[in-house]
Length: 251
Image (cartoon, rainbow, N blue to C red):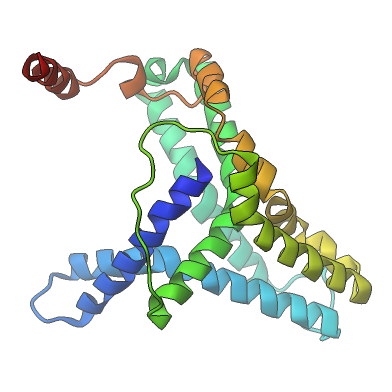
């Protein structure tokens, strides 16, 4: 579920930022330096995205003529958007093409189920991305300021999130976003159109977290091959042997 994922990300964020100190250490291969940098940027990109949106919204509201004509965008801005879309969707398209070309779609529930899974995963990722952005930004702030971090291992089994738990953890964020949206609407209503793809998932964070955590929904989708992976339909040999040895030792 989303809350457990964010709980794990909180610890991973602190670890990745701590490991980034090793980038400048002598004797480390440049590939490893790149891995440390990528690990840190996987979380540092969240506050950068938040700052980008904040400054862009502020410029819009202030009436600054950043772009004279939005119908004739500069080539640099079009290129930035094109590269961003490529980074977001190209790995998904290449992965989908690789499975289809290698004829391995049977392990993913078949061709139709695989395509449905790709669409479902993309939509879900788009809806959860703004929530992760705010969560990761908070985690980076906590890590950089040295605030105390309490780590409790999240549950490994599939568990549904209650409405009370989701509201307790996500409603403050939703309330802040709602107040900001209301304030922006009083100044410049048109800005809400551009902020809607990010603001709406944040406003719907509580029901989104609850609905996507339903075990019954996950079972229903798995029975139809949606979001199915080969390991769920046929367990790897190493896991089968491990389970066999575990059952023998337990007996």
